[in-house]
Length: 316
View 1: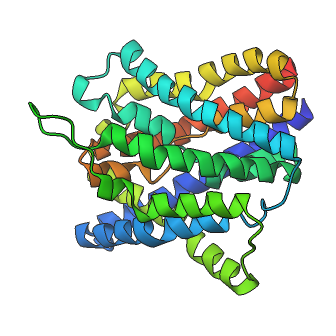
View 2: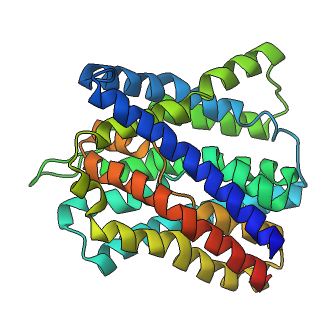
View 3: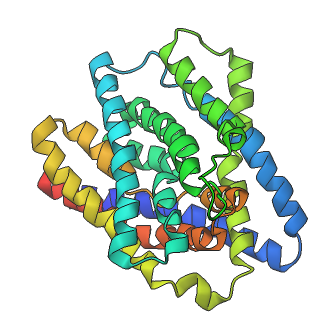
């Protein structure tokens, strides 16, 4: 029980960091420090530079690490996670009767989760530092799926015409960064120390900048609008607790590996990532709904993720 409580506190701490940074962005927007022009420029900086650097730098500790068979299993589970978490978004659309125009947003919020910033420290606290090599696999695979299938889902189209995919946006610096990261992970090539440190420094500003942008977006909404979307509460319960708990019960006896199944389910339950509203804004989807999703899933994850961790501890 003491161990489960300690893990829950670590999880809450990571979520609280995200929320505080978003509040800073909210205040800066209210004081006109972050206006629409600044937000646009920061969004471009995140998409074209910071995120690609973060993805490439994330493979440094993973190169050559881990048992090959277990790493292969992690890759398989990561792709299965992408498919199942995507399906969970569409399932939520149906169960919660989401308006048709917002249907693509919920699957995209599911794919664009916070695996990197929150997932790595939470999994390290639960499963030990040796799990980081496997979490890195999920970061890469989910990035590839988000920047391909995810972008395809929220890509704009003209009513009455054939669906058009903006390939130039899909083949963006983010996608290129994810592909480079995957290539580095699978190759014997090692980045030199100063290159790695430079990429890490640039990538490290991604989460705080992105959360400040989220806070700025939320500042434009009435308070009731942020917390008044009842479907987001149901969505959070489905994706952050119910589905990962069911998958844990199903996968554990099938695979017989508590570490891999635990990592899978813990990362499945990560809240929506702070870049989600930015991507929705770029593609013309409902970025205000996505921003509310980021805030509410982060807040509700204070309770739901610790509850999931306690559940997995009891079942294992």
